[in-house]
Structure formats: C-alpha cells, structure tokens
Image (cartoon, rainbow, N blue to C red; front, side, top):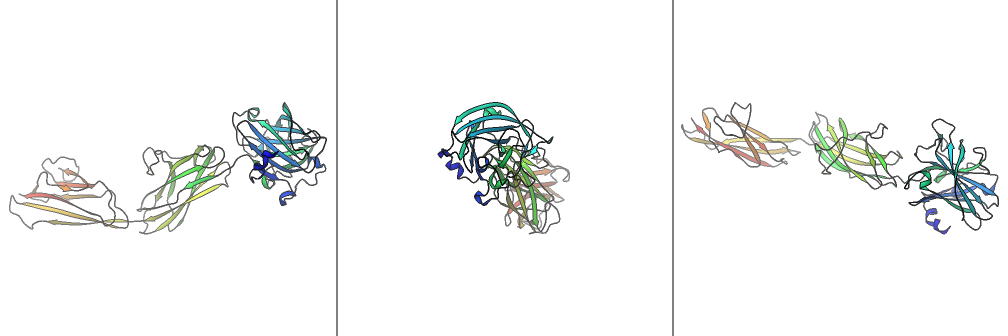
Length: 434
C-alpha cells in the first residue's frame, strides 16, 4: 500500500469519515467494525481508476464496498450508470471486483447526497444488477485495515480517463439499499468528484472612451482544471455610469482589436449563459469584452467593469478581472491664415490651416474641409497636408474624388492616424485671383 502515500496526503483526493479528521460520522453507530469506513481515496492513470478504503478493524468475513459512479457529472445516479462492487476478505486479503448497473428510484436519477450535499449519512436508494465479474486479486494491508481496488476505464466504456462524481458505501450483502451500513465520498463528507476545477481570467485592463462610444478589453480565459470544461462569462459594473451593454467576442486572431472576423460568443451548452465553448484542460481562449458607452457622460466619468469567468462544471469556481473605464473627450482647435491680405487678378494667395488636438483623449478620424474662396481658382497640385489623404469636390462639397479636375470647389484632408492631445498638423493650398 506504500504507493498510496502521495494520494493520501492530497486533500483533494483523500476523504476521512468521522470521527477521524474532526468530523462527525453521520452514519454512526455502524454496528460492524469491518464495514465501518474511516477513509477513502482515489486516483487514476491512463488504464485504471483506483480506489482506496480504510476501516476501523479487520474482519475475516466477506465485506462489501460499493462505488457509485456518476459519469455524466449531474450529481445523480441514473438507471444504467455503473456501480463497482468489491468483496474484501480480511483473512486472506482477497478482493473480488464486480461491475453492476444501477437501478434508480427517481425517474430523473437518485441524488448522490442529501440536500446539503452530504454523501456521508446518505443511503443510495436504488438497486444494483450484476453485469460481470472483473477480477479477483490479493492485496491490501497485512492487518486487513486498508484495501485497494481498481476498474479499467475500458470496462466503463471509456478509452481514456474521464471525470466521475461518486458515492461510497459498505454493506453486508448485495441486497441494496437495505444492506447498506456506512457511507462516505469526498472531503468533508460531501459528494466526491474525480475532477479538479480551476479557471483564470487575465489581465485587468484600463481604457478610455468617448461618450457615446465603444470600449474593447482584451482578455484570456483559461481552463486550469483536470478535464475539459466550458467557461461561462458574465459582467457587472460600478461607478459613475454603467455600460449600456457588454458583449463577448472570440478574438480570432488574438490581436486585442475587434475585427470583422471576431465572432460573437453565445450559449453553447444551453444553460442560458454566454460561454467560451468547450476548452480542453490547460487550453485558453482569447476573448474581447466590448462595452457600449452611453451618451451624455461628462469628461472624466469613471466606471469599473468586473468580468467574471466561471466553470460550468462547478459554478462556484470563478475568477474576475477588473476593467477600469473612464470618459475622455477629444477636441480640435483650428486656425486659418493666408500669406497676404489682397492680391491683384492673377495673383496667388496661400491659405494655411493649423489644427491642434486638445481634450483628454486621442482624436480619431480627424477631417478638415475648406472651400476655395469665391473669385479664385484652385492652383492644381498646391494642396498639401502631412499624414492626410486629400480629396477634391467639384460640385460644392457634395461628392469628393482624388482628381484635381476643374472646377475644384472644396478640398478635404483626412488624417490617416489618430492625434494624441497636444498633437498638431497643418494643411494648405493656393488659389489664384480671377
């Protein structure tokens, strides 16, 4: 039994049945010490699921131990789910392992524990029907107090390990449930679970937005559990304002930017919650939380959006990220000048516009439009403006193109990059007096 040492030291994989561990044995008194459980542990490898039990004292007679396996993880034993039965002889350390099918009392399956989640003190109400004998081996401790057994994953219909919820019982016969004497399962007397569940959501973010506008926060959701999981996504907010909505997208190219190819995340498992879809153990998904910012908010107004990711297998297992969002308002100051006040017919006047970004946020999509003055003609090739795309109107500003075809009535400069507060630029063109 020495190879169980590491498992027995793991608080996730070892459970005590009171009074050990300071717990109350909810089945007490158990009249037969050979069937009075004191401990239970479990582990697995690619081929087998292994069980360990310990009891108060050895007994030469046949003792029966039952492992109810909830393989769909719904906390219920449904008709047809497997029960592993093990006969243990303390006199010669022989263990006979048999496979049974469960017969539920309730149409939807029988709970693995009481309404508070305790397997300890809870007799499974269903019956068992023998399917086959699996193996007969000799093992366990020489003093007859500790026993180990196993069942192949293939016998349960699986080609590899799969998460299992379980309940453990002992009896003096196969007439279940009448013969059950003691019960236990996971740590604290609660329903056992062959799955570790953990989730992560990284990182916290800080951003600004105009009002109205959109704010996009890039995160990574990770399944740190021991088996596949679907991670649910939700949000709340606090502060001076609340977003009109927050929706989640898969960041398909993981660039942190909302692109046309980033699909909206939906409810893939029908539980009414937006989720990541199934994630294998250790797998991550790049997501974008897109907040719609309402109109009418003052510059500097702040909100904290708390995003939460949670396991669909264990809803209490969650992690949150806090995204700080504040309202920042850009502004543009424009000054127009000319190089001379007057010019004779045929003379050329140069018009210059200097624009400066102000406010508390970068200005995006800055566009400047100027009209060619009356009684002048635009000088072809004279329009300039660094970091801008220049277009021309020939119909009083109704439409624009890249051609300088006469007549040019208006000129439009569009910035090709955002302007941070304090940034500036100039545009100019020349017009000849008619």
